Length: 138
Image 1: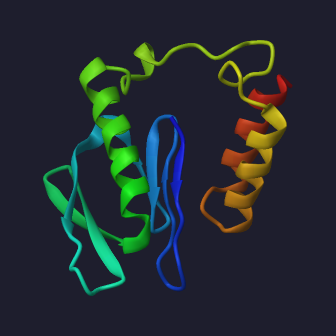
Image 2 (image 1 turned 180 degrees about the horizontal axis):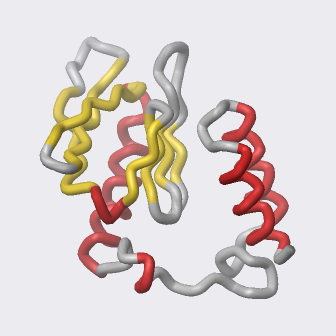
């Protein structure tokens, strides 16, 4: 699963990666997320709030209201993963070993996305290098 909910101005993107949610410069492993819900999306406000509950505390994550439908889709897929138990790393389906990525995905397109995340300081150089090696089977 990979979804990027684009940000705007001071609102950073929200990224649902294979095994973690990335928001506001923080990485939240799916295994530690207790709940995710849209708790506030006032009608006349351009922003809404996604509340992430982890380790017994609520973390408000702002999102661009115009991306609410995309966020809701990502939340539905997240819930499917939780219900199927795939958020446990031992239960995540194995990738296509010929490219080091999921079947049907172009490793070079995925690499471009990762480079964008690196350029935006959403992931570290170390994370980029690790994923790059997996994608290119180095």
